[in-house]
Length: 163
Image 1 (cartoon, helix red, strand yellow):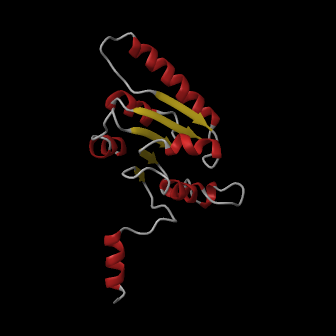
Image 2 (spheres, helix red, strand yellow):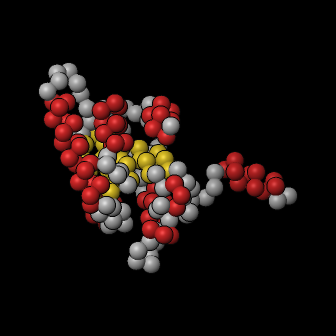
Image 3 (cartoon, rainbow, N blue to C red):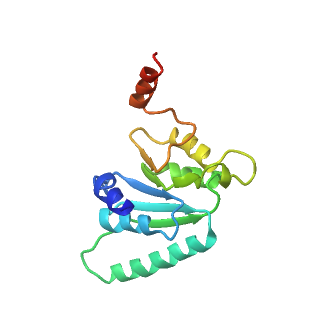
């Protein structure tokens, strides 16, 4: 259901000439591969877990090798990185995208993912979002803690409080 929603409603307007996609916490890379092969956009991902990243690379190698044997089929460039989201080496890699997805459902990037006592990955994402180029989209499944609530929601909260 999530995949159907993402690809039919969120990513359907991707333009291979303009858009660059990044999946933050890409797992085995299925969303990255889907965007590259069905939308033709450059697609990348960053994953904390080494095993999941290794699986994503292996799957991508197998799929792209198969695709190269089929004439007329174009797909976007695919790349994966493994490591901490907060690693400065990943900042430009992530911020070089203008369509980003992060499945941060159920606090997976929240305080419980904070290993060193600093900012959580959700806080880092909120800061990174402010550095993306104008018009960029970051789709998350839960609100990022440092971003203000949407204008309509803020208006309703003020009205409910009698302000």
